[in-house]
Every structure is written in C-alpha cells, then in structure tokens.
Length: 113
Image (cartoon, rainbow, N blue to C red):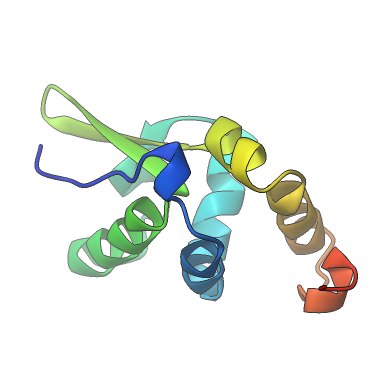
C-alpha cells in the first residue's frame, strides 16, 4: 500500500481541524469511534467509491485514521491513542459535541493563549 500515514509527532492540529471540518468526515470518525475498525467501503455505503476515497485520504493524511490492507480489503481505524497523546481531550470534545447534536465551536476548548 502506498498510503502515507503521518507519525504521531507529525500530526498537526490545523490538519486535524481541516479534516474534521467536513460533516461527512466527522460522521465517518463518529462511526469509527463507536464501532472500531471497519472496512473502508462499509462505513458509508450510500457514497461513491471515489468520494469515499477522497474523504479517507484527507482523514489519513490528517493523522486521524489508519488504513491497513487485509487481503483484498482495506480496513480503517481511528488513531485515538495518537490523537490523545498529541492533543489530550480534543477527540472526546469533538465526538461528544457530535453525539449530542451540538455544533463544535472553538469556545469549547477554552481560552487560547
């Protein structure tokens, strides 16, 4: 597989926010957080393969997911441990906001120095 996964130290906050700023990708992350590792094509079945591929690439390059080939399948999982190590609590705040139906605002993270 030729996919680039940034190392934990290479995950940048602006890339995480850019990836999670799209409601489709946010839903994909929510599904992975609730269900664990899944087939890439099995997360959102009502979307074209090319559109899904684009969204997975953005999430992968942002350091949010990891993809791994298993036979003819490509499995995807949330990089929760890496994200929690880099940005403690960020993923929980985002996922809790999504699961409660609230929009994610910068104010949820407190003051920025």
